[in-house]
Image (cartoon, rainbow, N blue to C red; front, side, top):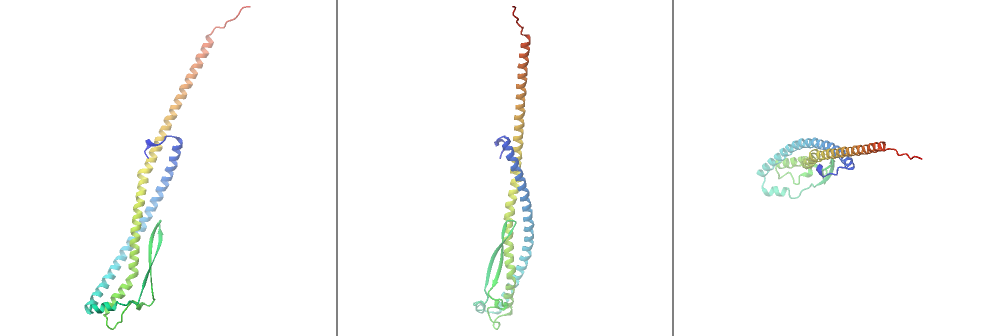
Length: 229
């Protein structure tokens, strides 16, 4: 709002002062929110980095064992081994609120609690490397879900940080300076009007005094006429 587009009245001045107080309070709250979001974001980034390294190491090890198993087993034997899985995994998605941002929470449930149900084949005709690969993938599943959770949370927090940063900059560099400029403009206009009114009043007072003085002078110089009887 440009200063020249405001109505220079006392009511508008009072309204702008109230808006300025609210804008400054909102600016402080948004800065605090941005700082807290940044702190949470950096913590999640560090956690995400550690999880990614762990998951990539686990997947790499599992892939190496799969490659060794395939070198010892035929393609048909590998396909038959995974044809009828015993275990079933269901994913559950929930959310939690971090500074007004809903971030996901992933959890999973298995159909049975038996840890041996991850193997959908018998051990007689399969390689031990295949067993190791399946076990490593099973063990890395919780970390994979946690990694997906933290990466999505980081994306959501980054978007909210950018949005909050734009709002803080808009208040700090546009709205608050415009309000201050408008308040200064209105104050100057009101002071100017008050000085003009005071000058007019003094001028009117001087004219009235001058007129009263001339009237008194005229009355004093007028001769008194007396009638003789």
